[in-house]
Length: 153
Image (cartoon, rainbow, N blue to C red):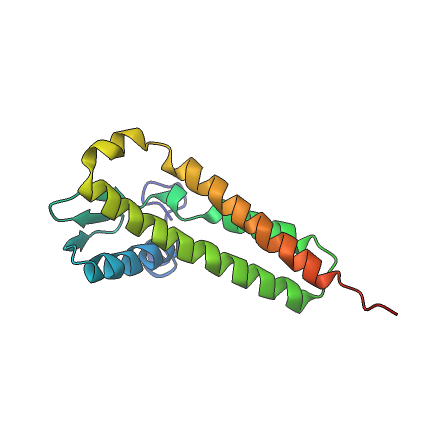
């Protein structure tokens, strides 16, 4: 759906741009939380500007599509009932989504209050991904343990 893409279609770009929907689903709650903490903000399609602070770019890698794909692929491959698979996919994806909003909000608050720290935290995507995968593996471990319990006869 990129305007520079080979198969660009205006109708699809304006009405079915799920990448922008996901960006907005991260940007809008982050702005709402920042405003709750008395930060004045402006937004564009890809950015959050904290007035007197920093500008956060919410680019493609911030959306968590790789993480969501991992969850879907891993759980789909398991020999469980369809409803159980859908439940764990939705629950885990929602947890990742909430943590992503918290990450964006926390980066805005921390970097606005301490600009020197921004230069030292250039790998925040990698740190966040490691944390998310640890959380996902913990959730899946608990889910396996819960689903593998057998009644004692």
